[in-house]
Image (cartoon, rainbow, N blue to C red; front, side):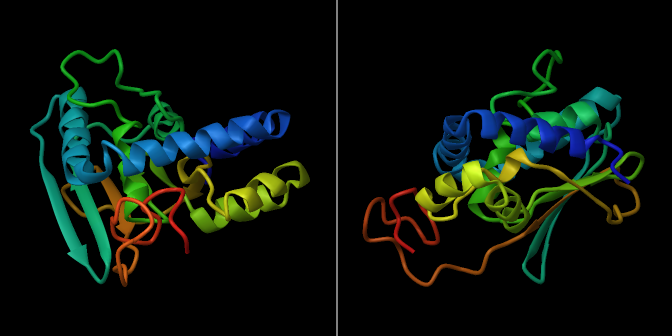
Length: 210
């Protein structure tokens, strides 16, 4: 079930991209800047901040459990569940559902962009409200189906703004927790990039050859 209205969110983003393909480029560049710039090395910190903020909003003790198993990193936390405003914040760069919440440690949405530095299919779900996912493969397919955007996709060597198009999802949240973040990690890079910053491949930046 599309409990968060992701179909509406995707339609709005696609309409904006088709009306102005430059917006597609801007979104892709902005996501890359957040993910591979200042937030790249703050993934765990961002997950912890989001967990702390969820506990603050619900007025409950904050608990975070990180687990890495079979190449999937999960972060389970207590606190307020994911809602439609949160999904929109996660899917809209520089916008946060927590912006006006007194005492919040982070801005849910901006820091979360760090997940794309390690994962191509992140998902978030809450026990009481539902789940969403983002997918590089699915987003690429949606963009490629739009003739006005196909050229932009080719120019970016297939790179898309992963977190702009949410899709409904479903999975179980561990007992004792309200929300779960699932990050299937990419395989380890085989060698560093010799072109620019020498960060591990794949894709340390837009200039990195593949």
